[in-house]
Image (tube, rainbow, N blue to C red; front, side):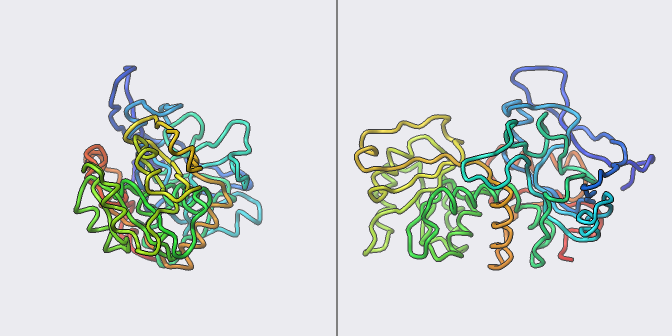
Length: 364
């Protein structure tokens, strides 16, 4: 569907109130993009939701603003560029977008004094992917792995990058034969950690509040899982571990809460808990028992431009596919609201995707 003035459309959240809110979505128009020398204009073919988009609508995310498109995940075709030869080299290529800027290759964190600027919905970055088009510097693009559909490719960037750093970089245990626990299976990051771990030859175990999600994870390669709501779930998990390796080497956690208390009973001495989120509780107790066993808790968030390139290359080489829970077609507010409902209800298993344009959600 085209706008009468032929200008690109995007969706944003709007409100006149402050405080405890849930901002509605609105469709608006923006001027036709005019790329600078090193920039590329990408006509988007799919975009994907993340929990941060829900938090933005609830005004629970730093820098929430209006007039900036939502969503950080996107795939599309480069349809015009600036004048530089490097930008022009991307013309007509299908690309996935690095979901943020300001972090080149440092292992410690973003080099930019302003920090890491994630796409979508905040003051820190003017671009977002729930749109017809987006303009980015050509250095933030990676050629899309050919085996991915547009919906799968859109599901990859932010969760893939977060999972890559949390598992590959921070856990220090992306090694064949290691025992890895991934908490909260069903979310996009947890599923990508599962995918990376299985591809690397690790024994991956999962937790969930839902047995159906555990069963689905086993079909994707997990060795087993437990329901974290059950008393003494850590004892049940230990019974699932290999007889010659009755401990975990690392935990990749997005929940927080009592993971140090429970996890330190399962981890080897010097084991690592790599934490990329705290959906259950915004704080964790670090107990003396963990100190005595030299357990390390390492925070992890997003990742560098180099890590993004490494992650996309691994996906390409291993022919990995992000799990898509459900998708809707087009910038239709009512349909997109149903995706946010899935996220609010925690009913999704995998990523929630918006495909854009006619017949562009299939593999090119």
